[in-house]
Length: 318
Image (tube, rainbow, N blue to C red; front, side, top):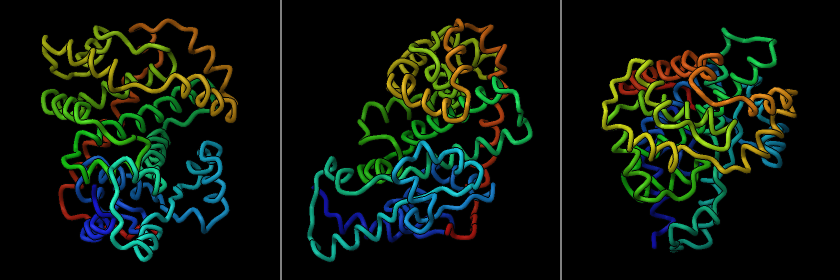
């Protein structure tokens, strides 16, 4: 059991210039989680804005149907959030000694998805110079953008070091309460191969699994990483198998239903269906020029993390 008031007190200690105080746990994560902080910095540098969903029409629509609002989020650069901290304060006024088990909190407090939506905006910004009217290229870029968001949310788990980290992360991502073995596997992989290599692997896996029912085979992933200049080693096959089949995964309903709905909304459903009929092999990846798309994300994240290690004071999000 933990006291809700203790969690609020902890979050209050991490005030900083890039966080949103009314997102419960956002201040904590912006200070303690490397990827959460890096994506926030990268998002703000695009001119993006985080805004209370209850205070504007598009935000209220987002609360009802978030998928239908993604295109508007990308165009406007405004990511809606739910004012969870103020809600927690009200709960504590009535129940100052409220104690909960970890699984109870996500049922009590609505999760914010600013990390995921910000990743979409950062990735879309990276593709700005490659913008195209050709539907098939638009599809590939959209799939890469989703793969980037999936990858960052998963890899940010490698920086969780306490139950409090896990609780706050679950309240600010699509990731549920995190299990110890998953965090341990990600920490080991990042420590052994480096964040950039594991991010490249994750983006490749998520790009493919958003199209096909199975992840790319381990030899294909290893070949891709080696050709990208990463020194992985001959003993990496086990790790690649484990990460691609057990961790860098999505629910089949997301690919079969949610993705198809989204691509139908933006007029790319025929291209998406046709892409899924292709054979997944190295030639497929070369034809789609996936390597260059992944590389621009990896290099941008590397640079942002480096900047985030020094004292950065951006204007507070609105």
